[in-house]
Image (cartoon, rainbow, N blue to C red):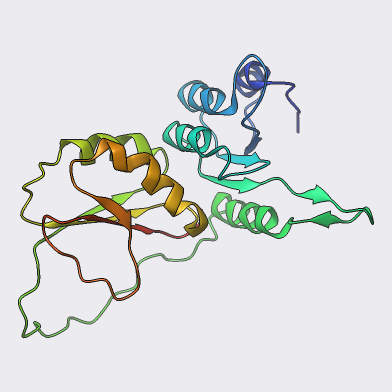
Length: 203
């Protein structure tokens, strides 16, 4: 394992000694974590997990880092007055999932679903978009190109922790002609009225 003093150092060290994974801070001198992630994924691609003091407070950089190829974002654990770590469980959980993925222990993936009978009601036309690592910028480009008169509802599944879905919607909304919001339980998609943003599994 190695430790970098800033983003530029991380890019150089990843090129010289590519690691199994990188825990990337965001707010750093010389080169921030978002740009460092983008350069690493171009030059020495490896899994990057963003670890920052506050994900909502740094969501612009989180968004850029994920657009550059980061897998996920989590808040930095802290030490309490008793010397014990606080808020460490989310980071540990993501590291365990990443380790399982690197070892090929993620399971078979596909589970067949029995065909259902056609519903008796008329369903709205839907456009489904699935987005994974590095997807937010591509997603913004696609949504920005959709016309306001689109005769279908757009449903999005973005690979991001559910806690950060609202922040992603806020960043994407100004770039869309159609209104965009986070999907709610029992929502019925309405063509031409909104894009519904949902979240996929964490890392």
